[in-house]
Length: 150
Length: 313
Image (cartoon, rainbow over all chains, first blue to last red; front, side, top):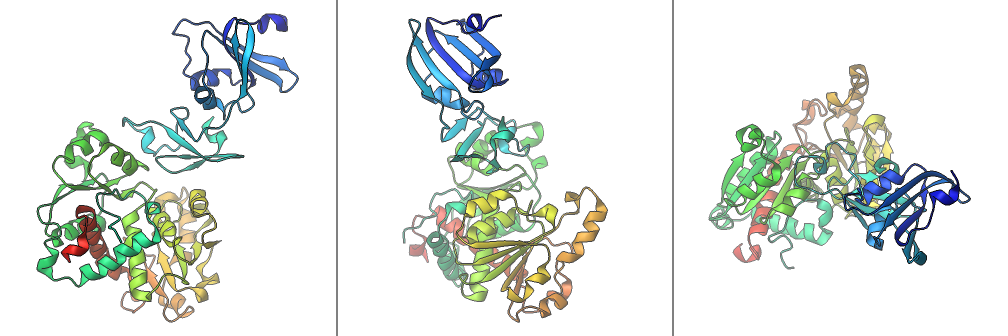
């Protein structure tokens, strides 16, 4: 199958390019995109890339993701580029940035944290340092590396 | 100074500045010498709710005694089996129920972050009486107050915290509390029970901290030894426990090699970390901690319940 077929242009929507190889499904989960609203979502995994050698690409048609949405994937796909497309043309291109707080993106890995109980509580992970990233659970206070969350 | 504790949750000692802690200590001095009848006006008509999801002797009775000493009343449960938690009720609903009956709540829970979450759902103040291995802020308040009372200062002291530094929640609150002062902290533990990295990260470079395997290396420098219990169940191999436990026992022999006025503290309960022979020496301050704990908690409750407790003294 040729590269052109895999990455064919969409008319309207968001293209997430340069997603780390194998992380596309995690990205969709972090964005709460499950396809149930009827928009076409195309996922290409293990696509050849000059920059990453291999990469994943996600195209979400008819939806324009805001920075606060795409920043949710900043730990999963730190090198991702976000392209907003209108009438087949890129009208906005941006990188993802680590937000101050991730809400319900990652579960706290500490099994005795209250956020892992049957309480009506959200998973809230704060970024205490952005470069290199270091996170902390808002509830149990544990320091967490990105690897512990992804 | 305006009362910084009025209507406030006590979740982490990190939330309190040095001047706020010193407000509490200064008011506690007055509480300690306050006429019994006057003291009973501070909490008159108020009710403290105790929510203990984990066993406790000292902390629960200390809060109970403290509330009674300021003329208030106490209700609650000392074990989840004595509540609807046994039927599967969650913490949020338990807190939202109990807060209808009380003015302030004391919560102990086995999960880290439980108190922070409870404070989010409650409209009445929550006092953290221990949240998993995370923190025990009122223990640290009474620990700092004991040091202040005995030594007359906290600045400039060399303090060793010994034992289970990984899982002991009192350790974390004490480290954070001490980081408000110009102290030097020595952390003494077996390698498998070293302090979690969050403690060192949270205090940053505010004070000098070093880690040690053997208290004998540093005993000569110490003004305060704060011993904690090493729990056998933390060691997968019982032989490992037997090997290390002896290195962390405080006895007269060890103390003789240190300063004459080096004091010994412990949040209790102890299981052999301090030999009974130390109990009757002037160095032993762990029973004084219990007494001062009641004073601090009475002051804290009075300060949470009254906008201007000084006016009532």
